[in-house]
Length: 165
Image (cartoon, helix red, strand yellow):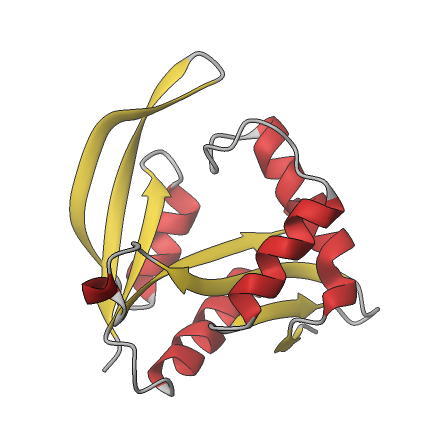
């Protein structure tokens, strides 16, 4: 059983573990160097001050994943648009954790009257995330060819959009 709750500062260590796995072992994130807990904590605190930041816990109270919305671009005109981010611990994949997190994140964003659209920027070969976003109503709106380089591979990115207003 998964429960979803708001982020607390003491979650940063476990979230850092989850994210660093994706940095060092996958092309799902284009970051190449693991983060320290302090770096991740600063990021998360900044995001949580403005946007929804959610954590999924398993029945034992262990963090199984996290999701948040954050600023999509710096220009003020983009304020009604947020980018979504979602990571699930590899041991919890395939059990509905990502779906539960994304649904709750969308719900929280719909409650924010200032938000109009959500953007998900997904590595093109991340079929699991692409299917998840499509199931939840996101539509593919752009594809960028060979914009990332990680582990010696050139990577494409697909952007998905969901209107939440």
